[in-house]
Length: 104
Image 1 (spheres, rainbow, N blue to C red):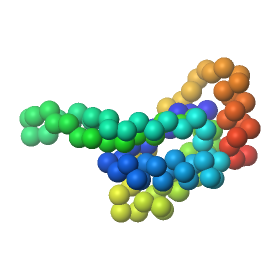
Image 2: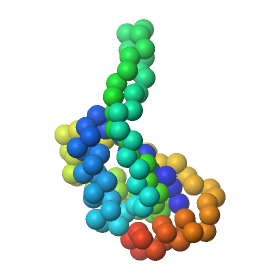
Image 3: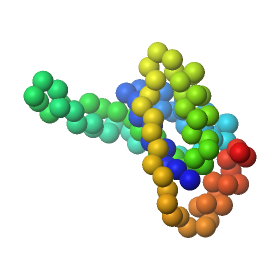
């Protein structure tokens, strides 16, 4: 199991990705984080940049499908995508992912 992290400067993009993940049964427990300030170090100054983030749980074997879906849907401005391994979780959460995502 993994925790997806998807970030974009566009709220519409993040909302569309959330809809696609649900529609294609690619993730569960999708969280939208809006108006998050990303701190960046540019020209020797700390600058804030507003971004929108999705976190969601899914199967590790679905990552490549999710990546391909995002890259093909958002060719011009591909959102940032990475995952973190979930090493332990309650059995109910694991069952939710197993039962509510694509079979692999």
